Length: 130
Length: 98
Image (tube, rainbow over all chains, first blue to last red; front, side, top):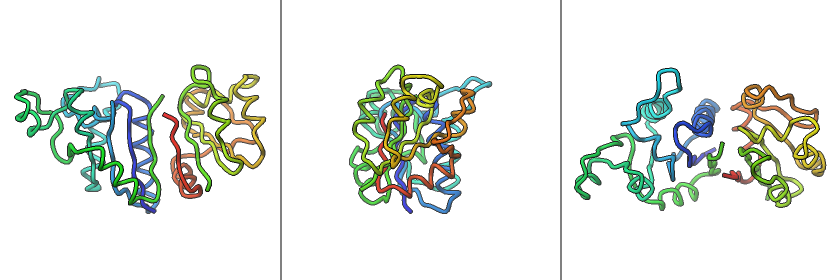
């Protein structure tokens, strides 16, 4: 079965960890993830500049490792990212900012990517809240 | 059409009854995160859950129960992450109440 997974919460929220554990279980169960979509505060999970305290789980690093290990399609909503200062090199250049945060495998793209993923997946599972 | 509803917010901060009113008779509910506090013995949220029709399956995520030192009543099936994934495949849709 194909899963699209959307995450709405920042790395320090328990739901971000839950989304990652769920995504791991999806693949371990022999299913497919057609897209991960990071929306609203979920875009911070793609921010390479986040420094997590040593005694806490480093969710941005864990998400990156997971995406890279499985070569997943990981999309960060560009509008949600820009308003939070999460700019990749192309957007930083476009707006004349120095911040360069998400680097590949993260890709900044539009909300249409979530819609498209939901259409082509068997299930869309959204994570947010506490 | 059946739907698995995911609840993660505390039932003491977000009213549970407005969500439960929208459940179909063959829908399922998975409590995770702070929503697990709905299983607190003697609480008003637990009473609401107990009044759901028997056809509505109730589930709770194991690690979130353990983290809160909560026990699931007999009616509530405790699932791990593979069980969570399996639940998603069993219902036609998954609705996360963010």
